[in-house]
Length: 353
Ligand code: NAD
Ligand code: TDX
Image (cartoon, rainbow, N blue to C red; front, side):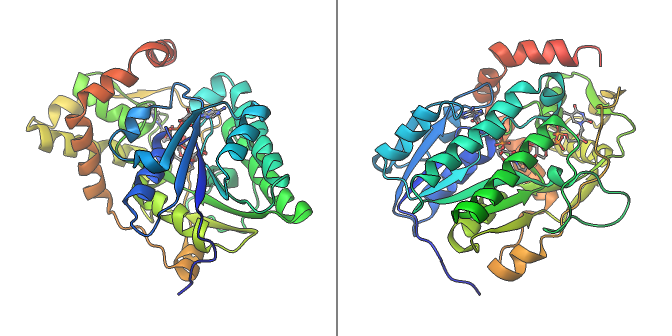
């Protein structure tokens, strides 16, 4: 099996207050073999929440920098001040529906933000740059087939096209300027701390509150689900052992139709709250489809398995139960994220759908 190619001492994590970035930082501080420093650069948009890290970092090795990736000077300052030798780039606008309602932030943060980071690395080529991306850049599959690392890019939403643009920039900076880069393209994540605008946490919270469970279209769209900690482990492996210039697909080998996911969630919520399934089944509401809704995503992750020895460790049933339990145990977190701008957006965009 492969050995470490890099042993970062001072990592800049972007978007470390978000869902997956925070899981990655929690993993770094659980990993006894990592003794370096972590600088978390995050703009704290509606999706960023420092509570996701409370109690999980070693303060003597951790710094939070509130900064916007669109601000080149702020990016330069953070990289310079903390003698960064590795950047792990999670920060992005990440919600497809929001990208349909308002694409500008997606282009600015996902494309320009990545460009600014790459420029900072171009000026300091000893830094390794890892870019966290998505399987959505490959477009939509029919009933069969899997995305491999050589599947041509065919993004369909403003979100996925902004991620595809940023992936191409990373590749260009590797080939043109010789930067040390790695890239990972992952399938749909789920787990604790997931912002409740995405399918799984939205459905969990709406079950708790007795609100409609909005299924887009016929509910037959397929996603490949991966527990967030498995993704964090994959990223950490690629950062240390991935070959420069390579991309690695990461997936859960867990394809499910949306309607199956909702039924599995209802089972789990009913079991854990000891309430009848019928209380939740009656909330299912079929609504207007998402424009340009990709039909099916499915990942071939044999390259990262073969080269780096990674495999998903959480099965879906256990992962869902852990997730629902976490939301049941964290009403304060829920109240916090449901205040302010998030609430307004939800009311405006989901009401009546
Ligand atoms: P998220 O929306 O939960 O978090 C994004 C974080 O980035 C937030 O903390 C936010 O404050 C920060 N951020 C946004 N704009 C910023 C800016 N301009 N400057 C600095 N910080 C900014 O996202 P997530 O679900 O944790 O996704 C993280 C990464 O993983 C993204 O790049 C996303 O494309 C990718 N990804 C996500 C999934 C998924 O299922 N969620 C799957 C595959 C890949
Ligand atoms: O209310 C809903 N009803 C519904 O049917 C929502 C929010 C979603 N859906 C459907 C749309 C998708 O087919 O569920 C599926 C999953 O939707 P999202 O949770 O919005 O995720 P998706 O659009 O698949 O994108 C996610 O996975 C890839 C992340 O948000 C991206 O950041 C990641 O790159």
